[in-house]
Length: 589
Ligand code: PEP
Ligand code: MG
Image 1 (cartoon, protein in one colour):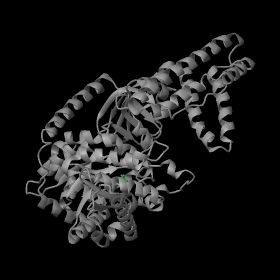
Image 2 (image 1 turned 90 degrees about the vertical axis):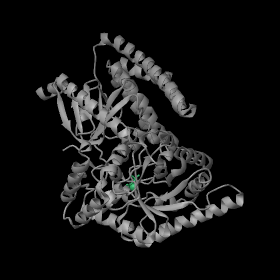
Image 3 (image 1 turned 30 degrees about the horizontal axis):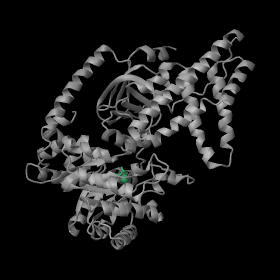
Image 4 (image 1 turned 60 degrees about the vertical axis):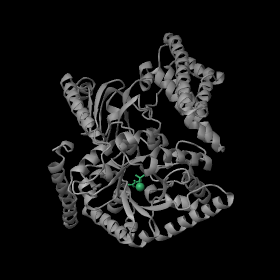
């Protein structure tokens, strides 16, 4: 009782994993994924009229909310996507459904939410048993509407909260949740599960949404509307912050803003170490329109365009023309530095309806990335043709994800050649000499980097997966987050093998995993001699600042010592010492 009461009124500070920097302040809003199914709550006979009235008022209010949502989506995404809300509104006008709820309430006088949800559940159960797959899939829509009505019944503030700026609390946030997040309403998010390199948090960083994950029980402990602060730098969720805490954070915010201004003054300067080693710093993007913002952070083009988000969140597949236009738009936004377009890396935590019917017990070790593309030639060739065509309009490079062996590169290249032949005979413009790269993110690929290097024009090291697969630690699982060690000497050794193999073959290597954007790992990146680092654009000014302070020769010595190190803690200490020596402003000591 006291603990619960304390949660309601006293300041509660919870420590999780800060995965996207920034500070957010606002009321808590529980994700719609968190839903308490209403049970039957009996009322006295004389209260029945009031309950029926509540029921009808809630239907009216829900229809109003759906209308507002439809208008917003129509404005932001187009009328096709908004159409679904019309269907939802119609559901709430269904006479037989309304009468059934009323009948039940008259038979057993009870609160409206329990009766309504019971009737809706019966409908949903019936539909789940049907043979028709389309109808079965509509169950999720019905449930969505049913929950919305229940939330309205539980208190208007409850349902309206999602429309106000808030800090979202959820059990888990999927990449598609993040994709549709409205930046003006979601000030920050906190979730019970997740990790630094799960795709939803990678996207949160790109979208500059502060985020903290690994906070057990938050959705059960806190309530809609409680005031909160989210500290994405230190990984804190503070509910019911005191005036003193709020004031402290105002000071932190001012300090961070001053540092940001200072970093942004350098955006036009080159990323070159004091002793003359140059790096290309580029941006990772998930959506084409992000390209418009990357120059403001000083990015030289896009080093990784994760095209799977083009496929996620829709039922159909994007056509070749649609893709070609999208890729050309990104290339145009990048200027001469160009864009590296990675072919579809669906699978893992980025699931899509292509996977329907295929429940994999180990999705990260399963049908993912190039494996999907090589088993779905039509799908793959549509994308390859679009990329090749975009190459005729601007600087475009092609990158294959999840390469584990030579045969995959050979097969993928053969399909590129086939696409070129087709485009040539159709008389379409495309880039004959498009550069082709392989992601090195599976240990087997790193171990045979010398075999793969002559087959491609460049390597791009995906450290997120390389760490996950090398250490056998699920990158999205907070239970093993402490084992996820970018500084593990085994990771440094693999990266060194890749760097050496690419140098011998005369090709260049970049890094596009999250390690590229962390200022603590910058000494390693410089010391390993990578030509390009690609990261969330918001991280770029800090990395440039670090590069411009770090002597490359000392970074090379640091790498030699890291290679001789016995554990991650030692490598991390080496990097931290160097960071503190050369750019203390950026690292908390
Ligand atoms: C990586 O694995 O490091 C990478 C950049 O790819 P993704 O995060 O999309 O798997
Ligand atoms: Mg990867």
